[in-house]
Every structure is written in structure tokens, then in C-alpha cells.
Image (tube, rainbow, N blue to C red):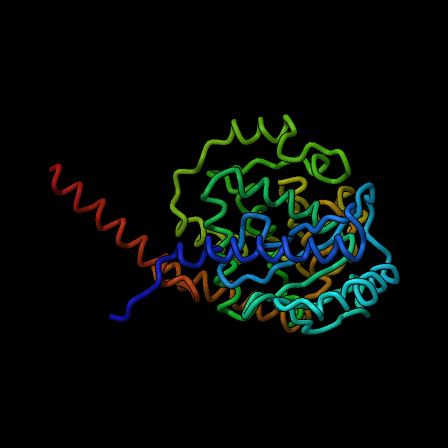
Length: 338
């Protein structure tokens, strides 16, 4: 039998974290030289939200002190293209890979060292706050972390993840897992208050409501494999596709027709609805092509069927093997005691 990497090998590794930290330090030096000492480079996305997987790209943005809004596109392009790019071209550890200046959020794509891909933006405040919210969820306990990572690995292996390809984003899948665990009767993951993260001066993780939720939540007596299998069952057999809204802000099962979602874009369309918890008008199905949505539903159904017969879904063979090994160890221990 061929050797498999352990499930933990799919987590963001210490060596990768160290490389990212060095990259941020070097970028900070460039930003300080170009824009002044009041500009700070911040990580966001999967490299910073606690749900990163090995091989993840690094998303960064620079924020000027006292600026609490996203930068307008023209200013962002000027800062990236005219002030930072010349210095980055001179830096021995950075290579400019691509300029994406026509998008809503202008991006300068870089490579740091030999293989760390970096997406750099300007004053992307919304992304920083979303990252802080997800980081708080990741700190509630390791079981949520492991289920999110497992679902992301499955989605990647199944070819249904990646907004650039017309699929749901990794962020959307993370919200889907959180919502599923909030409404699962045997899990009851707490619903963290979005307003603890949505504005400058908000306390975030230190908010007493967040700390109370962390202290009061009882960890579920279910394995990661059981919870991942339950994820596929929920979105295949229970979730009201096209009607129900994935809303971690509310953490309750509600129809898109309810007043809570009157601001949600295209809430009247019979498609999957995933609400951004901090920008409640944003429906994360906006990037999802209709053919890709069909492919997603088919992939979820296939994963549900294989887990029903205790076969590992795509990308999760090592997790299932480890779970079987633990079950065997428990059985052997019970026989020894008898």
C-alpha cells in the first residue's frame, strides 16, 4: 500500500508561516520607504484567518494609520503601480508576476523567493475585518479548524473551489462549514456577533460577548470524519437550496424571503445564497456560474454517497484512514479490558 501523508500535513506548516512573516517584514520595509512610516502591511485571507492549508498563497494589504475605509481604485492603482512597483522591481527577493489593475480591488501579484505567491492590495479594510472574524471562529476549538480544512481539501480535489474559475471561493466554503455547525443540533457552534469586528475600534476577539461564547460552548462528541460526512448530508438532503441562506451572522435556518435578508443581492433568485456576515448586501454566489453550481451540487451528492458507505471523499483519504485506525485502536483497547 502506498504511503500517505498524515492529515495534519495539509495544515499550513511552520516553515511556511516563517516564510510569510519574512515576506511581510520585507514588504513593510518597501512600503515604509515608498509611502511613509504610517503605512502598515497586514496579512489577510487563509494565511491569517486560522484555516490555512499548506501551499496557500499570501494575501496582504497596506493600510495607512487612521484610514478606516477601502481605498478607491484610482488611488490604489497609483500607489501600487507608481510608488511601490519600482521599488519591488529592484528588490532581489521579489518578482512582479502580474498587474491586475482593472478589477474592483486592484492587485499586484508577486512572487517572494522561489515559490511564495503574494497578492498585494491597498487599504483592503473589509478583507481584514472578515479575516479577524474567521480567526475568532478558528480559535473556538480545533474541531472547527479541522472540518473547515477537510472541506476545503475536498472542494479543491473535486474542482469546485476557486472564484477565478467561476466556483465558490475558499471564504464561501468556510462560511458554509461554520453555518452547518451552527445549525447542527449536536454541535450548536456559537454565533459570534458580527458587530464586534465590523468597524474601527471594535474589540474583536476581546469582546466580552465573544469570550462568553467561547467559554460556554461545549465541544461536540463527534469525530472530524462524522462532522465532514454530516456536512455533505446537510447540503445534499437538508439545506433548502435556492431558499435558505447560509448566514453565520444569524446562525439560524431562515428563508431568503425574510426581512433579515432584504438587503442581500439577488435573494429572490433560486440559487445558493451565502451572506457575507460583514457586508450583508453581498451574496457570495455572485462569482458562481450556473454550470459550476450544478457541478457543486453533483460533487456534494457524490461525496455524500461515498461517505454513506464509509469510503473517503476526494482529497480526504488520509483523514479517513486515520479515523479507521483510531476506531481499531479503540476496539483493541476494549477487547483488552474485557
